[in-house]
Amino acid sequence: MDSQIALEIRARARRSARAWAVTSLGPLTMLAGVAWGVLQPYRLTFLHPRGQGFWWLAIEPPLLVVAVGVVFALLVAPGLVEDLEAVEQEGGG
Image 1 (cartoon, rainbow, N blue to C red):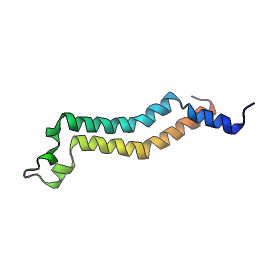
Image 2 (tube, rainbow, N blue to C red):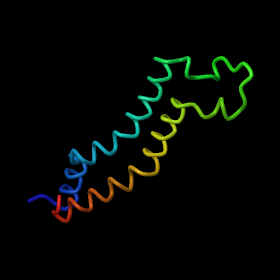
Image 3 (cartoon, rainbow, N blue to C red):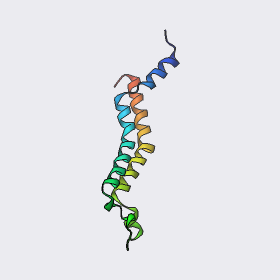
Image 4 (cartoon, rainbow, N blue to C red):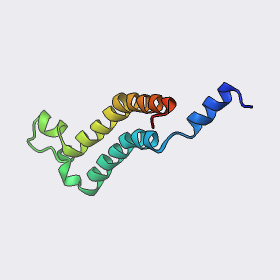
């Protein structure tokens, strides 16, 4: 028979597909923002800031997408994964 610790280690090792999907949303969003900036560099006005103000330079769609990915990965995803794991442990998955 396996000990409780061994069972918990195995359960964490094979996270559910839902938890994996939630965890990967942040990094995928950041990657999409970087790809968008690389594929359409004309959208990044800080590369050619002629006469632009601070907000025009700071608030650019690819940068916002990267920022949303960071916020999701650091603030939202850990709580969602914790809730998913709690539901799965209760057996209501």
